[in-house]
Amino acid sequence: GAGVSQSPSNKVTEKGKDVELRCDPISGHTALYWYRQSLGQGLEFLIYFQGNSAPDKSGLPSDRFSAERTGGSVSTLTIQRTQQEDSAVYLCASGWRSNQPQHFGDGTRLSIL
Amino acid sequence: AQSVTQLDSHVSVSEGTPVLLRCNYSSSYSPSLFWYVQHPNKGLQLLLKYTSAATLVKGINGFEAEFKKSETSFHLTKPSAHMSDAAEYFCVVSDRNTGGFKTIFGAGTRLFVKA
Image 1 (cartoon, rainbow over the protein chains, first blue to last red):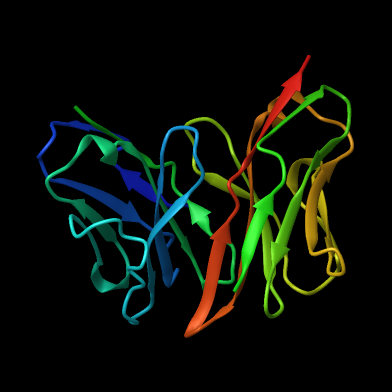
Image 2: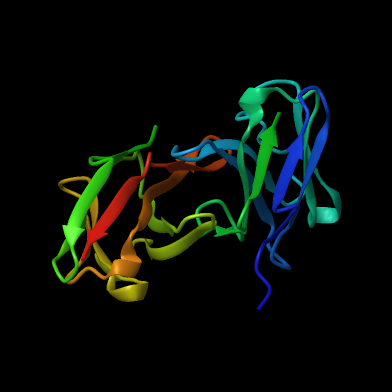
């Protein structure tokens, strides 16, 4: 069956530009997560959506980062005025509830020049 | 509050020898525990999960893990390593928190398999 799909798979942009990263979760999954993984590092939690509840934004590193989830399905992570330290792989995952396994996409590799 | 510690950042084994990746956790309630594997340029894939049923959990690719409450451990093992097992492994704990559940990822253990 279809897994979690992320697009684009790679994104190269200039410092100061805005970028949008997209995540298509597994159909029916109510939980959706965004993580950031820097080179050779573990996962850094960014934001968590659960159904219609207010998202847990506690991991967003600055107000340049935002995310939305439209209609309880597709999610977009937006980074405004990108900085070089934003370069990383951004992973999306979906699941049923937060204590259940997460299903990951292959990530978007973001490079800021 | 919960936390998870992967005791080794790197583990190197020879092909055909046993694998042991260590994970300790702390939890206030009854946690769910997971191991994920990440191959290069890929997302994480679930290997196995513990959710308060049998304490010895069998996963994919011959991996298994044993939940030991008295030792607060959830070590991942495999009897015989294969070259394809070379990857990054993450131990994860999910437990009740204010308003729901909170999931914490360990820092990861990179497994090297020598021919």
